[in-house]
Length: 294
Ligand code: 5RP
Image (cartoon, rainbow, N blue to C red; front, side):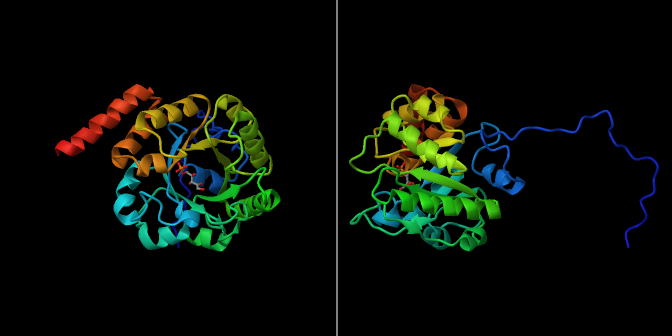
């Protein structure tokens, strides 16, 4: 039995107003506590931004260059990521369970690069996402693609399941090979995902990106896309952040870099410290050369 608490000398701090702070992420204030807590494992509450390391490419294209050995190539990068985006196969087989940051789990799949990519289905049960303690679930949405409705429906089912369990849903706007990656398309795709309930959206950087970010009421992060020269990739990340992206979900431009550890640290400077691309590139070179001379 706890002893009786009948002291008169309690301090209720009646002069201190009870805090009523809005949540730090745009469009996320009405979400439940658990969902906000999970979002805070993806987005750094200090900068409000994230460096997500995307390594889920194998779910449709097998052992992608740079991902041949996740244990060798990726695990050493984990301390520099805010969040890891991967499949449950790689998570269970290769990622140390001591990884304490947010995991974004790839939930859709089906076709390989040999087939029509938009013909995806949900490929993981929500129960498994809960079991794996993930912060968010990622699903591809193919606006304008052959299986557009099916992929949108995959997302909305995930949103319903995610809201029930307090897990965020990341809608990944997938642009078909023959489609134009312009602001008009990105505005359409991102806004549709947000309207239909995505917690946050991943898209591609394009000209007039500020209009894409402004017309999407929830956080936007950009994919890195195909491998670019390091200075160019840092410039793209910088431009996206300055235009309103709240982070990057970058894969190939990190793990296919000539020095992935240096590159992810340079990306962090751009995302969390608003570093200019040239200075971030110098930082990349310094880290790269330090490693060489060590
Ligand atoms: C695959 C994905 C990838 O996670 C995404 O494209 C990010 O990787 P990259 O920076 O290499 O484009 O969603 O469909």
